[in-house]
Amino acid sequence: MSARFWILDVVFFALLVAIAIPFGRFLTRVFAGENRASQRALGWLERGIYRVAGVDPAKEHSWTAYAGLMLLFSLVTQLVTHVLLRYQHKLPFNPTKLDAVPPWLAYNTATSFTTNTNWQSYGGETTMSYLSQAVALTSHNFFSAGVGVCVAVALIRGLARAESPTIGNFWVDLVRVHLYVLLPLCLGYAVFLVSQGVIQTWQGPATWTALDGTQQWILRGPVASQEAIKMLGTNGGGYFNANSAHPFENPTPLSNFVQMLSIWAIPAALCVTLGDMMKSRGHGRAVFGAMAFLGVVGILVLGYFESKGTPLLANAGADLGTLGHPGGNMEGKELRFGIADSALFATVTTGASCGAVNAMHDSFTPLGGLVPMFNMQLGEVVFGGVGAGMYGILVYVILAVFLAGLMVGRTPEYLGKKIDSRDVRFAALYALIPAFSILIFTALGLMTEAGRSGIANAGPDGAPVPHGFSEVLYAFSSGTANNGSAFAGLTAYSPQHPIFYSLTLGLAMFVGRFPLIIAALAIAGNMAKKKRVPVGPGSFPVEGGLFVGLLVGTVVLVGALTFFPALAIGPLVEHVMMHR
Image (cartoon, rainbow, N blue to C red):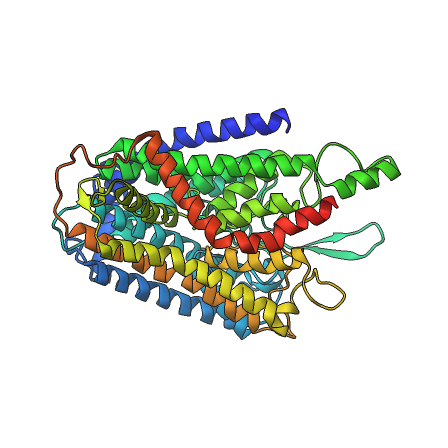
C-alpha cells in the first residue's frame, strides 16, 4: 500500500477526533437546551415553531408516545414524497419534461428516503425533476437524519435517567436537531461545495456542440444543496446516477476528503455526547475506540486487496506487457481519487449508513468487496448512520455487558443499572431482525425467476455465479442496513419485472429501520424507570481496553456466526476461483 494511503488515513482519523470533541459537546448543549449562543440567534424561531404547531416543549413523552410520534411523522412525510414523485410531470421546475415516476419505483424511492437508505433504482438526473430532487428527496434527507439523532439521544437519556417515566419530547428534539445542527451546517457546507465546483442552479440543461457537430445536453440542477445533507446526514442518495464519482457532485480530492469526514462527523460526535450525558467520558471514549477499531480493520483489509490487484489482470499484463502494473485494481475507480481514497471512502460510507460511492463496489476484488458488505451486516455500528450508529452500538453494549455478567456469574449491570430480561429480549430482537431480513430476502431473490432476472453475472444455465450471488446478498444487506450502496451489476428495477426488487427492497428497508428503532426506544423506556445502584467492585467496567475488546468481539461474533455461510458462497468462493 502506498505512502498516500497511510498518510490519508492518519490525517483522516486525527481530524475526525479533532472535530468530534467540540461537536459532541455542542450536541450535548443543544439537546439539554443550553446552547445559549445559538438560541440567542434562533430561539425566537424555535419558540414560534412550537406555537404554530401547538407543541408544549415542557411536556415529555413516554417511550411508547415517542415511538408513535416518530412513526406518524415518518409515515406522513413518506406519503407526501410518494405523491410528489407520482405527480412531478404536472408540477413546476421540470425543465427536461420528465414523466411521472412509475408507481412501484415511487413507492421504493419514498420508502428508501424515509428510512435513510436512499437506495436508487433509477438514474437521478434522468428520472427526477428539479422539484422532486430539491423538495421531496432533499427534505427527506433532513427528516430521516433528524429522526435518527432523536432516537439516539432518547436512548442515551433513558440510560442516564433514573426512576423516570419519560425519555424526552420528540417534537422538541426534532426541531432542535434541524434548527441548530443540520440546517446551519448544511448551509455552510453547500457554499464550500460550490467553491470546489459542485453545481447549484435551477436552469435547465446546458447544450454543447460536439466536434462532429451534434448537440449534446449537459444535465445539471440544484446539486450542492442536496449533496451537503446527503453526506452530513449519512443519506447517500446522489443527484446523478454515478453518485460521488460524478465530477458535478465530487469534483476535487479536497471535496472528496471533506465528504468522507462529514459522513462520520455526527456519529463520532455522538460518542462524546454519550460520555457527557452519561457522566462517563471514559465510556464515550471506549465506544469511540470500538467503532474506530472496526473501521481501521476494514480500511486496511480493503486497501490491501485493492492495492494487490487481481491475478487475472496480472496474467494479462504478462502477455500484453502493459496491464500487469503493480498499481493494483483500478477498475471502477476515478483516476482523480485512486485506490487510497476509494478504499477509505468505501469503508466510511458502508461503516455508516450513507451509501454514497466514489468508486463502483461491484468492481472491487472479491475480498475487497467483502469489506463494505460485512460492514453493513455488522449492524450499522462502525460509527453507523446519523443517530442509528449510536443506538445500534448501545444495543451491542447491553449484549456485551450481559455476556460479561454471565461469564462472572453476576447480574449484569451497566453504569449502575441492572440489565433485566426485557432489555436482553429487545437487544436480541435488534440483532436478529436484520439477519432474518437479509438472509430470507436473499433466498427469495435467488429462488424466484423475477429475482434471478436482475442478476447480470449468471452462468450458462441462468444460475448465478458467486459474484451474482454476492450482488443479491449485497443488495439486501444494503437495504436492511439502510445503507443504499449497491453492487451495480444487479438490475433492481426494470419494466419487465418492476415489482419484485421494488417491493422486497422496500420491505427490507422498512424492517431494517422502524422495528429496530422501536426496540431501542423500548430499552430506553425500560432503563429510564430503573433505580440506580452504586457501582461496586463486582461491576463490569465499561471503560478501557478490556471493554473495547469485549464490545468488538460481541459485534464481530454475532456478524460472523450469522453471515459467514453466505459470505463463503459469495466473495470467499469467488476469491478462490479467481486465484485458480
